[in-house]
Image (cartoon, rainbow, N blue to C red):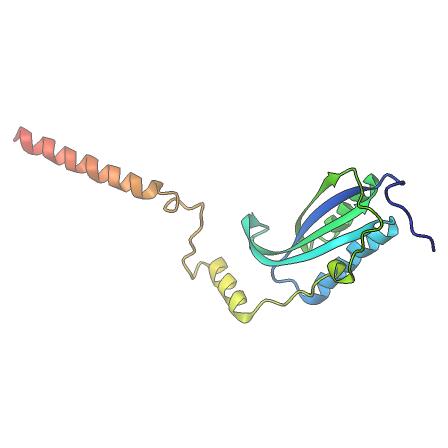
Length: 180
């Protein structure tokens, strides 16, 4: 089979990141990666790089999860591929929390550049440890005090408000004492 020259067919370079649930089992993660590979192969796209960034804290809760498994992809493909790629990730809503695809550039990578097989291997997802599962379960139930960045005390407003009230109370007492 002849290799398709991506530069001649109008292929563009894209980067995509998708976030898997933190408690996902390895079989489901493999199913998602197989679906991604299948979609790219169906449209004659070329996978350039795959990186698993592991479990990381999310910037904000997504579907009640505070952590997720990040997977980064770089590939060459036609514009129509992006819609199909994202549609397939959307269908995996039981496993994929969020995803984003961006166009890096119009210029495709030169075909003479070799892509090593290690660069395009999806890493196996390790199951959550018992400690991580217990910790997250306790936080959800409210048994452990969590330091949420959106709470009033973390922003410092709660402490400032209390100090202001104390100052006003002290000033009010001073005024009352002077009038007596």
